[in-house]
Length: 420
Image 1 (tube, rainbow, N blue to C red):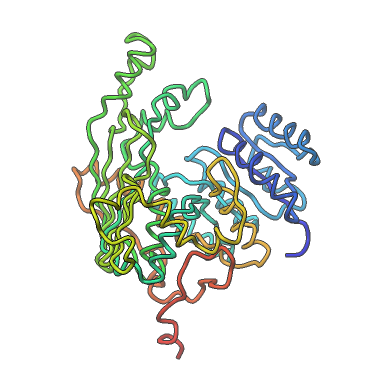
Image 2: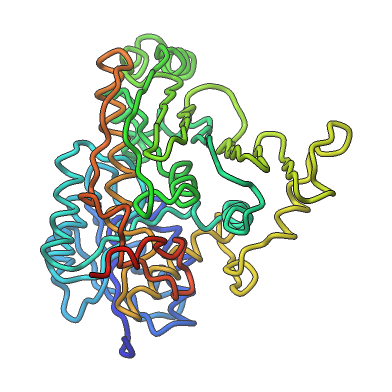
């Protein structure tokens, strides 16, 4: 696409504002982009974002409070959705049906039907929805992907990761901040934010491109910390002090893959702790442990397992095996460059009119973990089956765009077997 790409941003809370200011508008100076429309259900948020856009030297975008009107803005080409979790898929489907290039921020799905509707819409319209899972473009995640593709980790048999982050303040101030997490923690008990850890793991394990997730078991601890914190900070007789939160303090989810690998996901957002995604990769020739910041690699003498020297070698290894995406592209934003790269990947898919690197099938697969974990927890940790949203295309994909700059997938290994 050579003409100017006109973009709308829908959802202008903290995440939407950050993307607009730190990534999308700066990219408008480097790429042939223009933010022509902004939308939020709160009129003041849309107006504030439009004013900030103008202050930064750009034309003032049109503002909307109804996404159904925003996606019909004249001349619009693409939409980036950063609204509340509950609305992501609904807005994405509407935008895809409008013929727009569509990207949506992360968060879990509320039902399997929503995920299937997302897939059906792509298959009916031919317009993919890219999931903006920025952690797939993290420096260390891409370095590990690079090492694995070079054979340094051997066959991967197990991965783990989590969203481990003390969010009690953000959650409990949800009413004043108009933030969606509060209502979710009151009403749901599930792995509500699975994609930061699952996205990079899924690319490592070739999920939807030679492998798939087949089963899930999920377990939730008791819900204690939010109530105790609300009583301490607001009083036992306050509205929040009387709330019975459903969300367990720690949720552990175990996934099993078609090719035998296991994945453990951990949600830990309401207890005291430092931030970590707990990224762990265990292969037959090497391993990585984010908590501890170290690698051990059999075939690299400097990084063989040695209990006296291997602690904290991660920065050295990541620098040595830096992925080409990080070598060749400047990335700077509030998330260490990940946001810049994931939005750049979306823009590239628009310009070349190709499948995005985290496509609709990926989005449905990653997001469905939330709905399935809620089901499994309700059933006492029972095994539930993960749908194959590709309808068996996972082992014979022929639409993987391997020549794009921001591609994350390996070349389809069995393509020649299916050319009849």
